[in-house]
Structures are given as structure tokens and as C-alpha cells.
Image 1 (cartoon, rainbow, N blue to C red):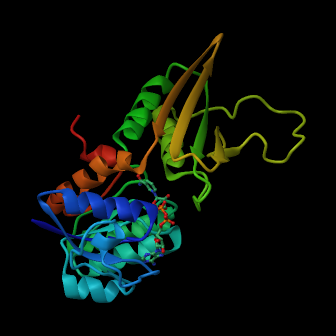
Image 2: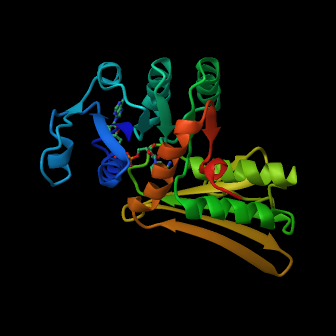
Length: 266
Ligand code: NAD
């Protein structure tokens, strides 16, 4: 049995993770933390009976008391790195889905994990289809001279562009080494209308609307043709197989792994 604590337990993703952990035969939900902690039992919160796990708001205390094997974090960019470090200092393995953590913070988390030999996973997208979208985009990169990325998310998302869009752009740049920024728009009538430029090359566009969950298109352009690779997460359940895989696999890791793809068999 793997004992799991969920941070951000009252959030949209946190609730879904709690539900999936409760339903998995080999996992046990031992703790739930949220800054909006209401002491309400997670089972009741999810519309069922009590399971003896109240939502608390003090992560350090919960980590010390419940001593989980794994901490799953779906909170906010400003909190996720500190939460991961709090877990690592207690040799609890972090599985971080929160996006918007800076590269410096990720490096620091990796160093702490390396020093105390504790494994962890940081993945901007736990949907297996999204990982495949990135993989297929990398394959296509060498055949097309130009590419732009459009990511579309629900209007409550705090960071832009999405972690997945940045990771895709990074992977495309690594695959090709260059991507010209495309045509020069001579007259930009609205500042920023052509999106943000990643590494001086790939243009990223962020759409935020109610009704969306998490979607991305990678559009390649060549002479007389385009290729669009698109992934849609139409519900938050789409992330759960990836999260459960990470919880199970992190038990055998001794360092931080970045990206779900590192956990998938080739
Ligand atoms: P949400 O706003 O619904 O939930 C966030 C929760 O975290 C809230 O309940 C909030 O009270 C809580 N919180 C804030 N600070 C906290 C702290 N210091 N300690 C404990 N809890 C704290 O957001 P959401 O839609 O559930 O998304 C959460 C994060 O997950 C976002 O960064 C989002 O981009 C990311 N996300 C990642 C994936 C993935 O596959 N990796 C998928 C979907 C969303």
C-alpha cells in the first residue's frame, strides 16, 4: 500500500486526485491539505461517506504526522516549489502537477532531491495524449520550416503560456536547433497580437475561455501544406492515469524526473 497526501485537495485537480487515490486498490489517501482547509472530511466533500481524512491547512504538520510515501501537488505556482521542498526535507516523494514553477525553482528541487536521495516527478501535463502530441510534433519538426503553438485553457488558469506549450516549444527547439520566427508582420495593429516568441523563434498563443479544459494545437507550415497536431483534455479525468502511474513509479526513483514521458516505456 502506498500512502498518499494531496495538496490543493479542495481544487479542481486535487479533488479528482483524491477520488482516484481512494478508488485505487493499492493506494491509501492518508492526508489532504489546502490553504482553504475546512476540516471537512474528504469522503463527504466528494459526495460520499466519511473516510477519516479531514482537509487541513498546515502542510508541515500533516507531513510530519501522517508520514506519507508520496505527496501529490496541484496548487498554485507560488506555492508548489515550497511544498515540494517541504516534502523532500521529510523524505516524502513529491509528484508535482502544478504548472508555472520557474526553471530555477525546478533546479533547486532537483538538487535537494539528489542530495537526500529522494525521488520525485514534476510533469506539466499528466495526460498521455498530450505527451504523444509533443512526441509527434518533435517527429514532424524536421520536415517543416515553420511552426506555431496555440494552447487553449479554462479561464481560471493562472499562468500563460501553459507549461505544456513551453515544454513543446523547448522540445521542438532541441529537435531542430532553430525555428525562424516566421513572417515579419509589418504593421501590428494590436500589440502582442502575433503571440509571444519562445527563444526568439516559435510563436505561442494562449486562449482563455470558460468551457475549455486543456487543449493544444501545434501547427506546422510548409510549401502548400500545413500539418496540425491537436490534443484535447475534455475532462480532468484525462490526467488521472498519468498521476497514478507517477505515484506508483516514484516509489522506485532516487531523483526528480521531469515530464511524464520519462516514465512511459518506449
Ligand atoms: P484550483 O484553483 O482549482 O486549485 C488549486 C487549489 O490549491 C485551491 O483549492 C487552493 O486553495 C489550493 N492552494 C493554494 N495554495 C496552496 C498551498 N500553499 N497549499 C495547499 N493548497 C493550496 O486549480 P486546478 O485547476 O486544480 O489546477 C491546479 C494546478 O494544476 C494549476 O497550476 C494547473 O495549471 C495545474 N494543472 C496541471 C495539470 C497536469 O497535468 N500537470 C493538469 C491540470 C492542471
